[in-house]
Amino acid sequence: MGGNLYALDFDGVLCDSCGESSRSALKAAKIRWPWLFGQVDSAMETWIIDQMHILRPVVETGYENLLLVRLLVELQVPSVRKSSVADGLTVEAILENWSQLKPIIMKEWDEERDALIDLFGRVRDEWIDNDLSGWIGSNRFYPGVADALRFASSQLYIVTTKQARFADALLRELAGVSLPAERIYGLGTGPKVEVLKQLQEMPEHQGLSLHFVEDRLATLKNVIKEPTLAGWDLYLGDLLPPANYMMVDGVIIRRKRGQKQKAFRGFSC
Image (cartoon, helix red, strand yellow):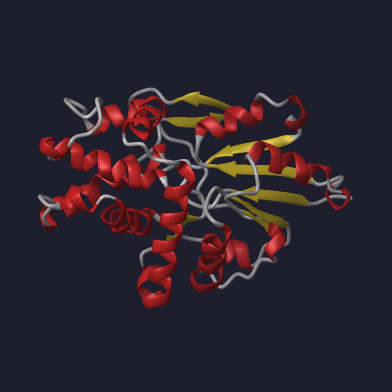
């Protein structure tokens, strides 16, 4: 048996959802911490959205956008600071140190992951219910991706930390693609490493060439650490602005300053 199976991340690989996720996070942050926004005017909101585009590479799961919005407000408005890390912090430092900063602010703000996930999902649901076209329009698929998905002859799976119902809605409404529910592994289906193990063990996938496309280097490193996943070809999806990593002969390396970028964007399958 021949053929290919593609396990595709969603945000940052298929879809640029940064505009929607940033706006949803801003809406949710105003609900969660209304007192935080007394000194936030429209100009500062625009600045926050702009910085969220820069910070997109650090986001693993959508709720983290809320934390980033609040942290950006604390950077700009000292009087509302409740975290020990905001003083003197820069956007560049957040990019470099997010994995260390996140648990600190979660503890100092007394926040729980599940509550933020629930709020973020509810805000998106309300936006969809009240303005579906506006929500859809805040997302875009990268050039060529929709056609590649529609005309694919390979086995396609979505493996994402996005809630599955949102990925499904965007696939249908924006790309014109309908995937069975069992082909979309979203938030709550387990770590991506475990999902890949499930996929490769399915009897119907035996003999297929396995490909995993992901936009987070840390996730790919986790896959590399698993000896049982050695049969997967791994691809690092580039982010805009350009990421600092590339793949050469299947090996992920850090890109040197000025070095020409090689990165996955479109695909044929």
